[in-house]
Length: 555
Image (cartoon, rainbow, N blue to C red; front, side, top):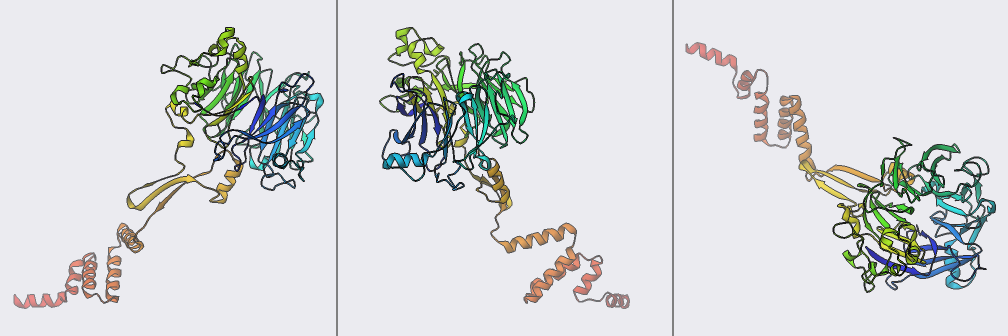
């Protein structure tokens, strides 16, 4: 496990850039006051260039920032507008911030960067629009639609149970609706407006399906075309809080839920086709799993067998979803993840060779001063400070994920090395294309196709998270004329047309003046005639009647 980079003194929520030209950029929305005093209720949106692939710098740098009147509860980034689909100049897409005071703010990241670099006001404002919902509580969850055809749709959920769908086709004049058909109050609750929406997740295959989870243990699957629930999952029968929900990146009927309950800190995989009452798989009683409530989790979009989760037990685990067991733990302590500023290879692994103990800092951790044991979730002050509350995979950088902790650190880790410990290479390491040859000139190839056909282009548009694949079978012919002759011969012989075939060959030889071949094919034609004995005599220049007369005279 390797710590790639780290941003100090930032208590924030994170959104990775989905823009291909800016894969190293992340947006940080401040969640605390930054130790500036009790009278400060504002926050800040900062854009950082992590410098992972940069040849000029190897540490994060601020490339844009804007002050806010409230702190962030959630944040999201979409590519909508980056391809000139709107009248607004937004080449880097849009950023949405869900604020503590119930406001939803839409930002232009391109304008934020330009204003910060030039220290002058640009023609396009940094804040495009705001949606005031002060009576709905903090915007606890926020999610942009991942489908290209619907990426202008933003879903938000509040601490008082209000779920809204906002259309940003015109970012400066957004339109707001509720899937419940009314004011949107208490979508997942019991009617008193106190049931918090903890997470929102758009389906990865169907653009009008979205799931919402609530603090009473219920997951609601919404059909936005019908503006009503498609089904409900009572994921936590005890009514415990669901911290996160995520759809399978490659299977639209599979959804994962995580429980914040310390008595049952489990991940549950649900197959909506088979059962709404019994999960398909669960991490309950799994060795080396979470022992206290799971705070956050995220499903890897580049490999649907990998998932990362963080819990109140100070564990951040990388899971193998084929076996539903943890592969390793992402350590909290800097001494574990880095040695002399570089990744320490196998020393970074969370488990020892017997996979039974967690590796601890060789110099000891500060949690020992307060009697805390972060490996088992013990209650030391340092253990609480190092606890992580957010994990996110990079949508563009394979094998990279970010973590946020209460000790005001935003870290980026690489799991490229440890992801293979499950016994399989990650899917991003598998060949993107390949070819195999067989007898007869047959060639089978596979690979990604960027809109090779209209059908594939439509498939890519409707399922942006999965690349369209194509398998082609072709035949390589070195001598086309020989192939044509062989096919003709096989066709005639299969039908028993030997006489016709020999006749054609005799005619062809005669036309080119090849007397020998013409006589040879003529002889072959006679051989396959029904009265071949008589025809053979005629072919050799003898008349059977004359032969009979001579024979009679001789006798």
